[in-house]
Image (cartoon, rainbow, N blue to C red; front, side, top):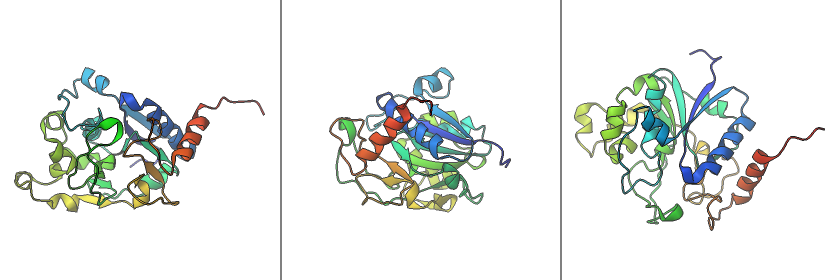
Amino acid sequence: MDKSLPIAIFIGVDPRERVAANVLIDSLLTHSTTPLAITPLITPQLEQQGLYWRHKDPKQSTSFSFSRFLVPQLLNFQGWGIFMDCDMLCRADISELWALRDENYALMCVKHQHIPTETTKFLGEPQSAYPRKNWSSLMLFNANKCKTLTPQYVNNASGLELHRFHWLADQSEREDSNREDSDQAIGSLPPQWNHLVGVQEPDPSAKILHFTLGGPWFEGQNSFYNTEWFWARDQAMKLYQQP
């Protein structure tokens, strides 16, 4: 791969979390030592381009729950790309994550063992429990190995089939919902690259904070990292002043 190319980053954006997306983008730019090509995934735009047409699922908590799986298509099934939920904050150089790409895998992520005990999360949205919970919130896609993810597939597959990565297995394996043989196609990332705020104990070494239960941009959402997020927001809004 041409190392001179910008790092391709796709951010799932929900209209209720625009401020979170903007702060995330600023945090990525602030820490990166490498040029970035950042693409927000905005549902109406994907619909206008004929890439997304599925109806909202009752269990769908954000507008990008399923559109995230269009990233390989948007890359023309070539090269690598990073997908991130918008409710994140980057604290490190994203090129460090980019350097972890491994051609042996079709996809790489933090393999959380997250079994939620609550039934709702931000704004009363449903909290669903399923195997590989939160794995899809940050993904490194090796697009050439994700050719199953055509718009037709993404718009028609079940949510569990998408988020449990059954599309990485062959057809016979996908037909058996109890099989998890796609593990061999999924590489592991260090947990610091997707720290679940409010789920895991605070980690000073966390490189990406993920406010999966709801961030401080929602009234009444409190966490250990609220002050840090508000500081990042203020930095993003700061006007330039002549020295």
